Image (cartoon, rainbow, N blue to C red; front, side):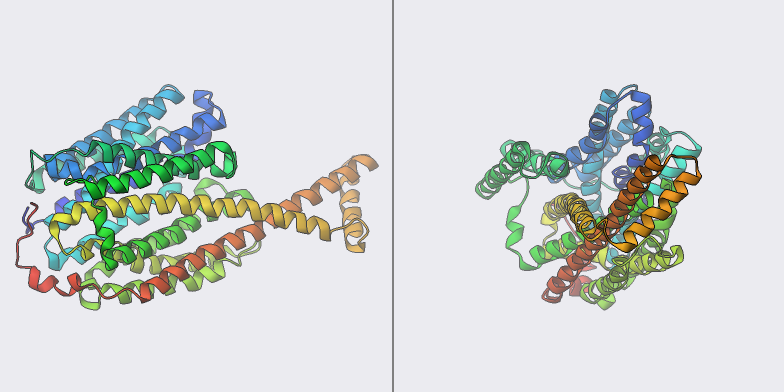
Length: 519
């Protein structure tokens, strides 16, 4: 496949499809209570609507490279886009929790393939000298979608209908299919390319068991038999998968790419940034909704400055990547994330909303500089167009795993530290302390003025004190978790400092006139 002169309509189609796929990983969370009421499902049953999507996306990503080689990237992308759109329609028509789960699996199968194949297509159809701006625009779909998800879903649920969060994908999916069909050319195929069935079985087992353990670890207990069993299964399957890929002539995933130092370090940097970014995206809604009592719509508006600034900066950053280099942009971006992140780790119940907006806007500026550029490092490090699909597959798998593990780890830390802080506060607040006695007395008088008896007022005062302890303990736990998220970004900065400037980026001018072929 040769680079195209008129590639922007096709890139827009890829961005549109990927935006929808990423958006649907988070947009459904706000509609969970509505679905529980409509379907009559329990909390555990309804969670599979979310979990099934994540697991299916991870399971199908390794297939993307094979499908692109065997059937062509254009046909494969169109098929995955159709699958996602059809799944969205079925989600909108779902009549029970079971039918919704099946529809979400279909939707996720298309979404997982679409994200990975789309990223590979950009590498093929865009001339090398235009790769920075194109990847910058692509970054909007990957990193802005999760940030605007709560705002959109909150609006749909409150003002329209919860099913609209799925059916809104249909016209955009049809538009994306039309643009892909019209403006993107097909790549070369290898009809005789064998399918690595064993590799697919082991990769699916490893990824699904790992993400299932990570997703259910806090709920079931990290040392419980099911979680430990899933982690062991993932470890064994992962070992068998790597062994298989190293032994076969036509691996499903080219794991030999990890022998490339720049590729591995770039992957590590991008994964750490994903953990630090999405950890905060999931922690701040807990602060907004559970501690401040805001609605999902209010929470989305609170997060909007970060989404807006990152959405503006990401494509602009791509325009300067070839001139400035990836490393300076990533380092500058990480610094712009770490500084406001440090102040975010000190937020409490009295933090002004405008202060949060400015901190998140500055953080969004930093994310716009470093998120998409860090994803380009492993892709450019391959230095071989034929290995781009494999690099794209590994990048997307690592992003999916890093995001899931980062969120699960920080949520688990938040829960554990909340219990610890609550226990410490209860120890310090003994009933013999004068301040505690005075406060309980004031609360008791307040409840007695509302008509409660002396005993009832005293019990209500104790209950109020217990609630406040839990609330302030949660705030302290949130501060601890946000600080850990920032330390993860500090680790990414340290790793980035030892990454060598990619030679592939320096060769873009020389390679711009050379056709990029997929063999």
